[in-house]
Length: 425
Image 1 (cartoon, rainbow, N blue to C red):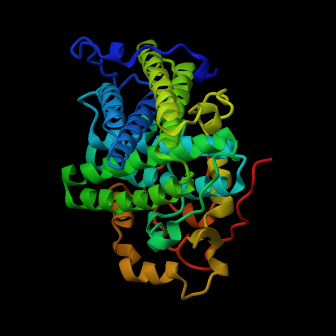
Image 2 (image 1 turned 30 degrees about the vertical axis):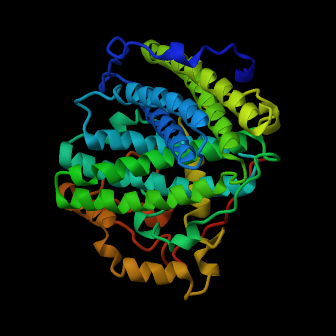
């Protein structure tokens, strides 16, 4: 499939009666978990495209170009709202949060498994263990506050157990900066991966930042606050991987191509007929946006789209599915790694005065006071153990105790072995 070869509709013709296009929410008791995660993914993708376009408009004084971008942005906001409104009114904030974290785990794992650039793969694998642990913390809070088991929401496709403990995620901000790719030489899927994961993590960060004050008790508010700031770290890591050298319109073309690819992937993998039709409708809209952006690129920068994206053929569809064994392998091999400068290092191999240890002592002097730790302790006090959904024991022996939450793994030297990151074959 090549969206550049599709015949686009005129953008003006895509403005339709809003009331007739008000979307019907899914049934939270019947929805496939990956339908829910696709909805979250495309919500974030539309937000990223829209806000990139806003930033572009703020960096040009060309009124004709601003008008074209304004028309496209309005359609993108309509698309985002249509997707957002698929969430039903009776799905709680915490239930929806489980969907966010399942998306983070299985999207990151799927992108990592396909990644040819080892540096990008390491970034994905590294953050994967952190989102995996966030799922576990929120799942314990969900059972305590609402009596809902997360395994019912994730369909038992994604395990719920400790990863690299959240208390270990707090790094000096400068250690989250990464080297960018070069989209002109990178594999198409690598460029797509950097844009997709940035949009997804940014949406997660925004969601947590917005709902933190809506949580109904102090511990819940503090947990959202703690994890929201980790998501800020993830956004920094991933956005730094993106190619920063393209012009505004070149980068806009990549945004539209990414949206086309994702809507096509959603259409190809969706199991709900109603929502599948929505993905098809939005694909048609994005093809129109892609062709319009190509026109603008030619008009204002005298460049052809093929100079930016030489091969418009899509890679294989991006599929969201179970990744249990892959996550277990990454957990076993890399749980004791942290980020140092632009690279990743085993805790045993970095000096005791490294920024990671200094920053940890500065903002988390008593790890047992971290909200992410207190949530598990409260669950253990109430239920006699933590909440987990495991297919077998955690591959890290120090994380197998269901009656004690470990705050040393990933924070302290010599706690457990980790063999390191591995490239795809």
